[in-house]
Image (cartoon, rainbow over all chains, first blue to last red; front, side):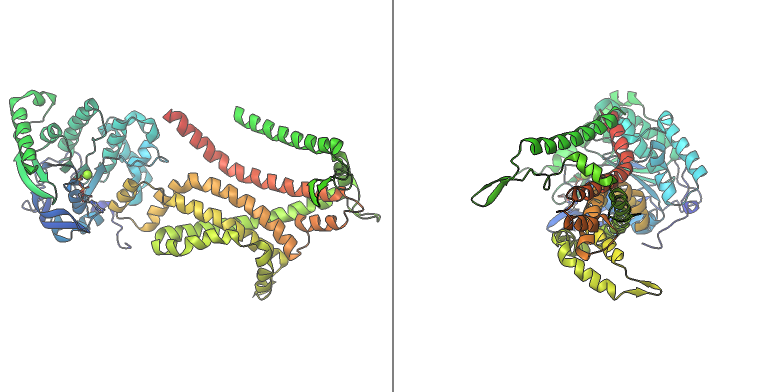
Length: 283
Length: 292
Ligand SMILES: Nc1ncnc2c1ncn2[C@@H]1O[C@H](COP(=O)(O)OP(=O)(O)O)[C@@H](O)[C@H]1O
Ligand SMILES: [Mg+2]
């Protein structure tokens, strides 16, 4: 863990203003995430069993499935927080480990995980500070990001002074701090009420449009998966496998709440539900 | 703001209450005490066993020995208190530093925690009386250039020995209190362990550290006084209690004057540590207010 420091300048591009298209300079053929034959066992439990999944750059892919099917484990394998027992993971053409050292991804999990002794702005600045970004640049970036998630007025507040939805917004801003090309999110809106949830979903799409980053999004809500995703990956439990991949075609234009009322949306929801039901083996 | 005055009021009332109880028992208690079959049930209330409060205070103003130019008992007690305070603080700081370092090591190496923590806890059951001569003996062999081991050094080491354990245990709990989600976040940042300690674990440990330091302060005072007594170190309040106790037949009030000094020393250290904790308490109170 001694050679792990990375210069922020080395972080790949993909900041605001970058188009959602594949980076023109980079090898356009390299997917954002490649998971090949990944198996992960915890003792006798096989959490993941032969997962194959390729996610293209700029894509938003949801993982959905019954509780315990290995969604979180898969996300952590991609993040290099859990080692696969078998198989290989590549992130942007690099090993998952290299990608972590290079800070190619940002994470936001269900528990916002904000540090209570830091202000909201201090929490957003955390990864920048840890990676040696100067104070002025840090301040500027935090201001920018809090603007993006609509919390500019709360920069000096403590996390506990914020509602759950606001805390989750801070966590997203923090995940975006180093302009990652990949965003990994594990049920980030799982603990929020329906209204807040739908608002944050729309905000996430706006953030993604602004940054062009790839998003892998774990959820257990079918409408959420459909609203957000280009593809929904349906997983089955015991052992965790990819049961189906449902493409969502709601038009490439930016989605707004009106989409939720369209027949195409309803059709996708039905499709994902059916795939989910099929994973519950008849016994 | 209100709370501080209320707390001062409670302390003052307690002191008055204690004095009243003392004088009250002296007024109504049996002069020769009370025994039943050789077992003493009530203490003697005579002037030698329980001098009047006024007499104890009066003793402070009287000269220590019957010679011209002798310092007063009050000055002797004050000098002793300050001397012991210095040793207790040195021991408290040293013990806290060792305790914190041990906690960090134990947090870092699980194996070390399993091997060390039971001993850290057990160390508190070792009677000081037993280890005091050992430490003095080992210390006597230590010589660092021009500096030779002093009895005061033994007192500091013993005070530190009593202070380190609560800090080690409290700090370890605090370091381990960091939320798993936050630990995972730091892992995703791929930063060295030192950054995790500095920016996550130590800040998370702060609320645990304050009560641990309070306990360490109290332990260091007790440790310093008992160490002075059991090593026979001169100059401190511990030794003074013993010296005055030997003169109890001629001037019983003096013993209580010295004990008063020891109690004042304890309050002084508690106050000093309290200053450290006050900031944290205000922080916690603010957080609670916000949450409510
Ligand atoms: N660190 C771990 N140790 C042991 N078992 C684990 C661990 N993480 C996950 N598992 C097991 O792996 C399976 C998948 O868990 P998880 O990926 O959290 O599922 P999901 O996120 O889909 O609910 C579960 O059976 C869980 O108990
Ligand atoms: Mg999960």
